[in-house]
Amino acid sequence: MVGLKPSELPPTTAVKFLGAGTAACFADLLTFPLDTAKVRLQIQGENQTAQVARSVQYRGVLGTILTMVRTEGPRSPYNGLVAGLQRQMSFASIRIGLYDSVKQFYTPKGSDHSSITTRILAGCTTGAMAVTCAQPTDVVKVRFQASKHLGPGGDRKYSGTMDAYRTIAREEGVKGLWKGTWPNITRNAIVNCAEMVTYDIIKEKLLEYRLLTDNFPCHFVSAFGAGFCATVVASPVDVVKTRYMNSPPGQYRSPLDCMLKMVAQEGPTAFYKGSLCDSDDSTGFKPQPHLTLLAA
Image (cartoon, rainbow, N blue to C red):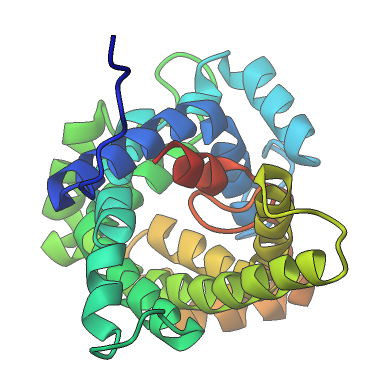
């Protein structure tokens, strides 16, 4: 009996799209509470003069999740999950699914390998395309994650995901669904530059000094280290992005205004709020991007 052999044909673009989006959704199901905790920590301390005594205080990643479960119910860490899955199907499908095709487009003809510069450029290009397409889902996701549901009929501005899209478009205009696009694209570019370069450097040194062989542990350690470096450089932009997307009309004039007010009111340490569980797709200690790439 002839055994099954793996196909020698590369997967089509459609297969890459579907595979990347599906893998990202499965990873999001596992890590979504961490992303919600990150959002709550990032917006904590905003508008300190407003109802400080009544606000729920969060301490650390685990403490944030436990506090949410205790005060808002066991489903609260998954607030915004529907929008989150919609985001992954659109964002990851484009960012990962189109990466190889765009990388080949940027690679000079006759070249056998793509340089780091080419890979960074391809990652930034697909990342910008993905952010532009998926931004409305990201805005809705963050709004749900940031809203506190303390008791029946509490602070519920949206009755559901589709109602959130309609309400934001009605109250803030269609452009409100694309609020924070530029900070998001900037963050994605920073992540790609930091993660791509540091991943290659760490992996190269591990192999050079024979600390690990070229296998799964080597890739995982390299990815973890690259994620840490990406968090250090991208977390400030990520915090500004979250606050700006979640802000009501008129609170901030621009992302720069949001950044300046945050530094003036809370100091530079505010840039790293929620960094231990950052981020939802590319940075930090959260394993979702690595789970996505391995599954895809």
